Image 1 (cartoon, rainbow, N blue to C red):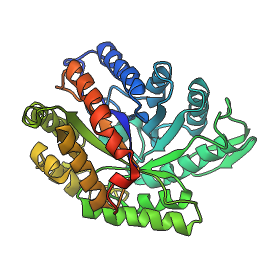
Image 2: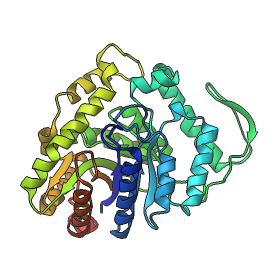
Image 3: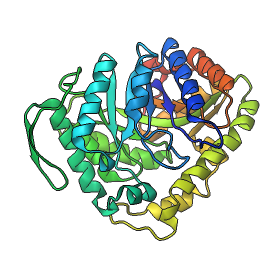
Image 4: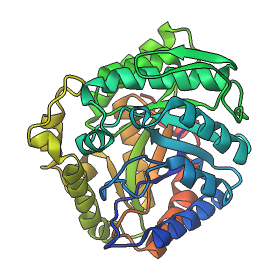
Length: 359
C-alpha cells in the first residue's frame, strides 16, 4: 500500500508570481486534495532564493492548510533546527498540532544550502551537531514538562513548552535525508520516518536497508516509514504531458543548482562530504533522465502507476509518496485536472496492497 500526499515546493520568484496569488492557488489545491482522499500536504523550509524561498516557515502555511482541510496530515518537509531555536520550534509545533486537531507531523532536515548558513551566521561545520541537539531537544520539550538543558548550542532552566502537543507523546517525526548514510541510520535508531529523494534505485535501496536495519535493531515495531518525493503530471495523453512538463522540470533543476551554487565555487565542509560532486552532477541532469529513472512521474494514469510500482520494487519499498503537482510553469487548471485524474485512476491501485509488487 502506498499513500500519496501533496508536495508543495515553491520554485518561484516575485517577478514570476506574487506570493499572495501563489499561496491562494496552493490552498485551493489543498482543499481539492482533501476532498479527493489524499493522505497529506507537505511543505519545505528554505530562504531568500527561488528554490523554496517563499516558504521560510512551513508551520505558517500548514496552519492555513489545516483550515482548508479535514483529513490531510500536515507535514513539515522539513524544518531546519540549525536556523530555529528549539524552544520556539517546540511551541510552534504544539500550536500547529492544536489548531489542526492533532494532524501535525514534523520532518527535520540539516539544511544544505551554503547561502542560508552564511546569512544566518551559522557555521556549516556545526551542522550535524546542531541538528542532533535540536531534534532531541524538541522531542524532549514536546514529550516532557520541566525540561532543563545545558548543551553545545542551547541552554535554559526548567521550562515547559506551551501549548502541549495534542498527539501524545508528540506528533510523528521524520528525518529528511539526501544521500548521507548517517542520516538514514539515525532516523532508524530514533524510530523516526525517513523522507528521501527518488535517486538511482539501487543507491536508495542501500540506504533504506541501513534505515530498516537500524529501526529493527533499536527495537521499534514494524518496518519503519519511508516517504519519497516526486514531480507529477498526470494526463490522458502521455505525449502531451511530457511536452508540457519538460521545461518546468528542467527549470526546477536549474534553480536548485543555482541555489546550491556555492558548493561549486569553493565552499567546503566536513559535514557535507561529496556535495560539490553531487551539485555538479545535478547540473547535468534533465527531465528525460529523471523520467527514465522514475523520479518524474509524467504520463498517463497507466504509465504513472507502472512507474511507481517499478520504483517501489527497485528501491526496496516505500509507504508514502509526496507528489508535487503544481510546479512553476504548470497552469493551475492543469494541476487541478492532474490531481483529480491521479486520484481517480492511480491511487486505487496503489492502495491495494496486493497490487504493489513485492520488493
